[in-house]
Length: 484
Length: 96
Ligand SMILES: [Zn+2]
Image (cartoon, rainbow over all chains, first blue to last red; front, side, top):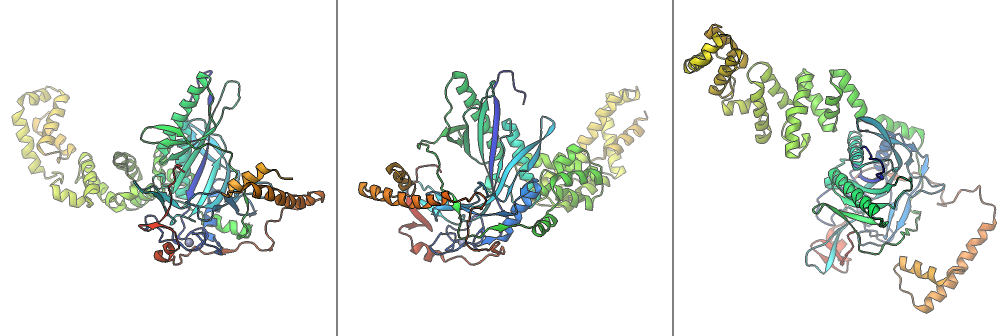
């Protein structure tokens, strides 16, 4: 974003919480499952009952290490867990087990970077740290109830926190970063990365730096439930701080909540006081040591990451960079592409359909490639019907939508709608004769060498056949019969 | 020495309501504990890493396997208030 002379510079840092793809919780064997009846996935450990002891989930560590490797972080050979002490009804132990960072106590990993593309240029956003922690329970504020309700199913679910350096320079860059990070987490099979479902959560620190280089007061923005919401909330907050600066008013250091419906951020009414979490080493968990052999195992298990996948698609299938980018927007899309090409080897055609018609459908319906009824085999079958002349491209587009809506194969839609292309020359010839008889004027024009009139006649034949005629055959038949 | 404001701060963090008499008594007792810990400062410990665990153990891990959770009735039976499978707590106004 070009900064006008004299306008303050935007500085944004993100704190992202990622729910890890494990079967069980971080420190106990309770299942991780969304939508189970309240308090059915709890045990003495995740309820914080006296005497219960946590035992660390090896898989959660593996996924944290995967992420750290993918972000190029420095992985610390020895880290440990700490208690973060505070009182809140969704926190049964009155402390959260997390990894704090202070002298001699590094978290799982520090340093690292993620590349984003912004204003057409590639830029690295530095990662400050990656650490492991547990989730809290969930509070439900029931209408008209005298108390609040607590469900501890989420208590102890494995989370990874990723903190960036304040390297982002605009709300759009924050969006680009989150999109790139989500893609990385999905390709690495670390998390489902869905903000709408809470498996990816993002808080943002935002401040403005004036001409004089003096950083302004920072606010923390919370409660954003989509990447789009992060961008909107930051845009609002940047404008609010800039306005305060213009009027010479002070920005208060505070936590502000994003109100999606009203499109504003608002400060907490409660008086802010310096947080004092009294961190100390968790005595119930011994230190974690990650040696080279463990790292090597994790490295070997790391799935192909987005950048490598993109390069491979370009090299193997001759795709352009823009198409390869869009086909690697999610692992599901990349997989769909490769599986379709396995059944219909013209990769360019497959790519065109996926980034064109299929992507348009997904955008329009706000859905994802793995959430619709289309399969690679079905798409390949449809493309084959175009290739062998059974369908025109225009008809195929209609059929694609019907296939998705009605959960059908291409052939089934073609048969059900009588959409098979008319390739029977005799039948087509009869329709051509009718069109010629009905439009003597344009026929004379064609004979006089006016090609635009031929286009009109082709259009009339297509109309008469409901678009089912093969345009090449129509052209040829018209030319033969008009004798031009 | 530890002053009474510090005691009050620590008490508030721990959600404890102390009487005036308790505040005074704990200030004195906590002060003595801190004085005792201060004696360590006199020792040359700059090269000694902080000890967080007494056991020379690392990497106590479990496989990512699901184990049975508790029956909900049993869980909620321990709670002073419950409704529709939830624990009921005093109303929280903060948006947390
Ligand atoms: Zn549990």
